[in-house]
Image 1 (cartoon, rainbow, N blue to C red):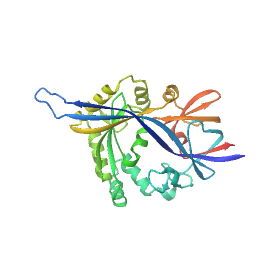
Image 2 (image 1 turned 135 degrees about the vertical axis):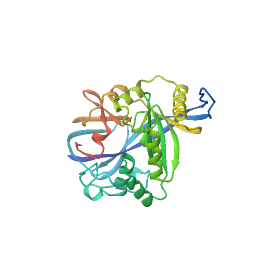
Image 3 (image 1 turned 135 degrees about the horizontal axis):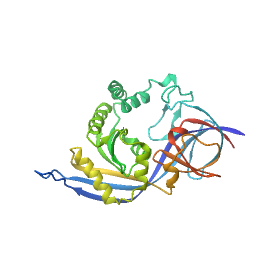
Image 4 (image 1 turned 90 degrees about the vertical axis):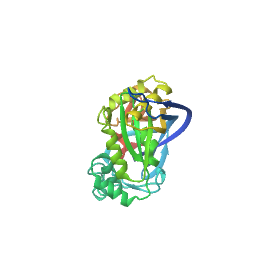
Length: 299
């Protein structure tokens, strides 16, 4: 019997295992600048997957098995329902035609939000502010071991967004009620020398630096504080590190860009890479290769 399986979302489950606090006061040739205080929260993360199995939403975790026979089209990623509750979402089943959206949802609020945050389309940001007047946005600084990245996301999705990218830790820089102001702040901070919106250092370099770093909490917190000070900011900042729980390193460092066929057993997710066990060994697959893609599976 063949079923149609679509992986729709990540569902991170966090356990706080430690905290570390640090005060950093940068010095210049002429003066002592204001203090940066970092409180670093360290979490173990175990990410489940939200899967559509013949149009029924289910949550699956480590040990989930499927036999992938073939791959079908990518479906539209538009969804409706209570935010932050992926098991209660209603997903569009039309085939994606552009940027992951079907023709009907190319101008949907979710598509506008992506255009706002992933480009210089400030008109899209203004439209989102009118459509989502009560939304809160986080502008954050990621330290990934090879440098710094500035990002923006909806506040309720912060942990999931952090899980999707390589990092040693990330500090919350600002919380804003405007997508336009959040995007402008992100762009302004990312223009600082040594910072980027993600295009400055390749994903493979960020992944390798994050996974192979032996730095302790104190060094990571200090690096974040130094980055914040270089942005001209000071004060108290909450920071977070999501540590992959029993997630093998090698498949994360050399992921496939296509889901392999055969018997797959899901193990973990980190940095936007899903790790599976196969008869031939462990494989990592990029999130973009499998998310919203129809998997024709044998039960």
